[in-house]
Length: 458
Image (tube, rainbow, N blue to C red; front, top):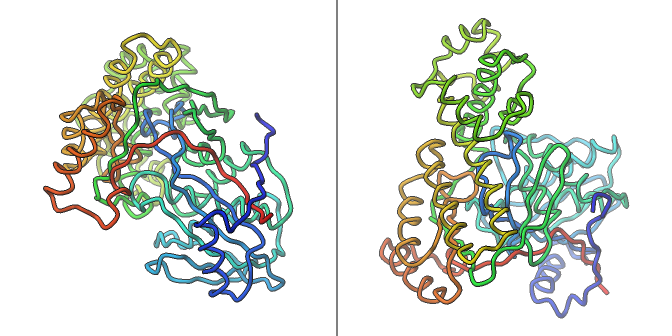
């Protein structure tokens, strides 16, 4: 798998209504025909929330919703970006002078992240221009990774225009790194599944080195995604980056407590690896070393033996420098327990006991409780939606994605699916007058989809 490149497929565009519509819109926009198309899927994380950037494995699957880009390389050095959604204005810039504004998470900046990532990987200065028309059907801010899908799609577009080749793993690593240009300190799950996904199977994604293992989900149950209709934007709010920093500080304090060289430690997983103990034992170390009251900056400095200035400049990131308190115990407790749940989930899928669906559901429920109470990344609407899903037959239901809005994922016995969809729709969307124009985009059953692809017209 390691060296495998993204698939290129020849297709009859006329037989694919969405490609055909995109081709026609491209023509009316640019007065020409696309040379090729690229798709990159969104994803739903089944279990393993907020732990990829701590170094731990996660368990996502790709969804069928995706980013689709029609592309025409041009002789000028201009990058012209347009979007089929009129809410997203056109953008054009010189291909040789890419500037990404971290203060504004505008749609085109995600494209520029992928473009710049490939450009810098190959050390290229003179880049060909291109006309691109983007069409996405992943609801934005839904926690299904619309932004990372756009970064991945743009990376594969750029690679294809250059005529270069990279493996799926290399592409995922470049795109994960390049999304940080927009200020999101993510861990790499979203980009990895977008490239490494395969139809019919979820994946256990492990990091350092990046690898993906098939996880066969139980037959007899369906995963249902429900959008809370509260939009969450990771790059626009500080919640996400503050959590990343709280985990980093917890790792340093735990390392110091155990007599390790704490200044080199960045992730909670490193502490476990250096100590050579189990996740269960790390939970005991956390109980022993950390207190539940929030830590002030002064307390952290005193414990680590550093000055406030050193904390600000050497450890905190620009977007976390103004935080006054940090919850270390709660965040570490969530990460170590969630990392263990991911491994238990995979084990249940492999062993497939008769009560597998019940066991997996319970792990998902535990995950939501930990996200809500220990990581504090839920919101009242997500909690309400999770309760409604469980009430109408889900064996497990949890927030998915970064949280603070976005979607829930529920494990529903297949024979209850139709009544589940009807009842949840009535109880959450209709009752709260949240009935969006496209209800199927807000509540739908999903199965594991394939990864990023290049389409050429046959």
